[in-house]
Image (cartoon, rainbow, N blue to C red; front, side, top):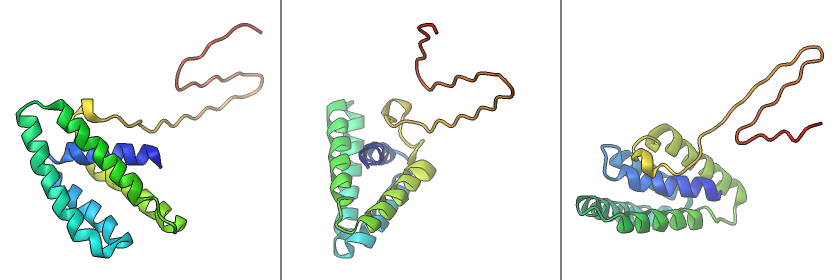
Length: 143
């Protein structure tokens, strides 16, 4: 779940300076409401505060403050998903993933998108054909 919380924290902070900020706040608050209904409004207020901090950091070109906000929400989301009810944790992680992929993914600037894209590869070989597929470096050291 570390990958999704890293991606979500980054996308969340990135969205705060865009027109997507309201969807980000509503989406994360809805997740919180499922696991911790009594804390959802507090989280919504903290997200509103994060938005003000993001806007101020961007205005002053304070990359360090933006990075601190990203890391803070990454940790917060990781703690949020660390539930005793593992089934609920998996459901919430899937919903968080959908929120990032379907709503917030492109809200952040390309330089702030530090999560990996999905790679899907398919190959078909007939007869005595050979297929090599690689999503990285491939080295052939001979037969």
